[in-house]
Image (cartoon, rainbow, N blue to C red; front, top):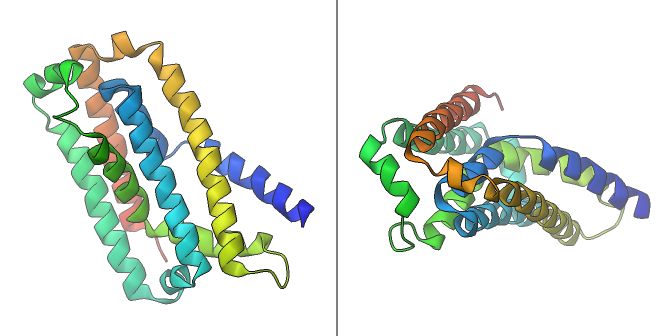
Length: 207
């Protein structure tokens, strides 16, 4: 059991450190909106991992693996959401970019940041398929599947929060420069292209 748990922690840590949509989303939030809102975004992303773990533990994740319709539906909804985020950044007017530096909590609430991270994770069926194929490898014979899936997803969430804290902390030192309107404009365009790329990758992925 100890060997399985250590193997899981090693594997999930490596996967967490691998850059992806979640990393881009958190970094963009840190640069544009500050550490508190970036933390809310990171909490949303990692809460999505926990939710997927619970879903897989109770067999809901297996539906994505078995049903082409369920997988395709969630895939296209997720791709559309990522495309929306990307286009929104690409089409943002220069005036809106300049206002980011003085954005108030009322304009961009913590819950909105949390929801963006949560939806970005939950609307990606590849996360569910990954969990349903990855987690069972580390569940001891005869153990409670829901409990172990929950504990492993919780561990993934904790590791993700620590890694995101490192990313947010690192961006803090450059926040004054990153929030300059000219820099923000470039970052929004680049991040928008990245989001659209992830949308295309998800849309073209196979079951």
